Image 1 (cartoon, one colour):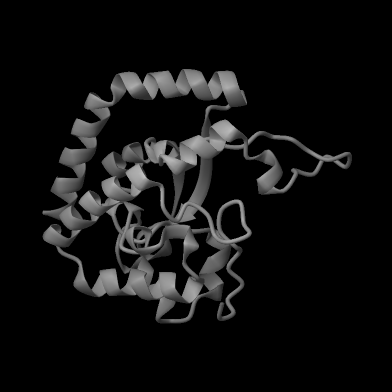
Image 2 (cartoon, helix red, strand yellow; image 1 turned 135 degrees about the horizontal axis):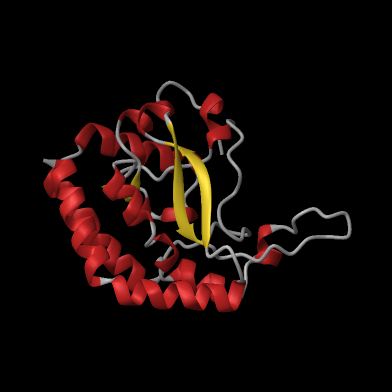
Length: 197
């Protein structure tokens, strides 16, 4: 039922948002250059890797040694706008249609974090990762890692279609008020080291 719900809603959303998505492709290309999309391998269901697609929000600015500058220096005002409104996440609807992701579930993090999880934290991979999730509507990037993982595993244990619908509704409200976009003192979220935060 969840997979059918995901496919149906993601398909309808992509049709309804087709013109806005094309407009965003043009704006990202104009403001940030090419490529328009940011692709990164992330862990999916049971930790299996998949390629997640988002709109890029950062430039490719580098220092004199050719190394990428810190996120905070590469994140433009336009990129901040995309993140604050969650418009950068819209291409993930394609991942939902493919079955890599769900509309609701723990957010897919980095592959490098997999060996750092405790057995309890790793349970977040017992379900497909989501475009939004229980942690996102309860603090998003403003949460510490322990809180975030606790919310993720709570969702794994309590997931239902009705909870998904509730989270989607809460997500729309959060997007409108733009809460929890970044962690304190960070451009996005602090790096997970496997230690208690």
